[in-house]
Image (tube, rainbow, N blue to C red; front, side, top):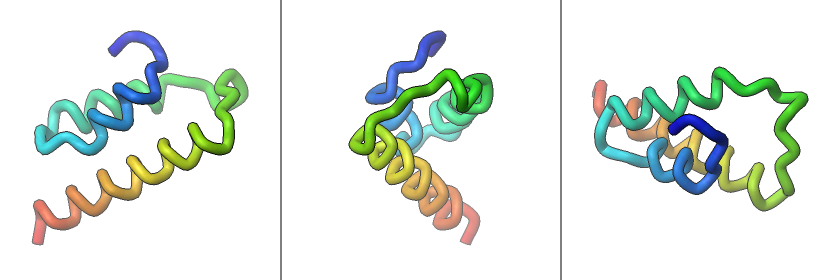
Length: 62
């Protein structure tokens, strides 16, 4: 994942594979917020994916 592809990032965040989730988070970390212009729908998708990724991690360490 070398460019900002919201669909692919969202799918990777929901992956059962830790590496996929980590790669998606690393890609997000590399982008500057000022350069991202997300619509309300895109922002909702990204936030939902991040929250679900947190749930996956929480459940993995219970």
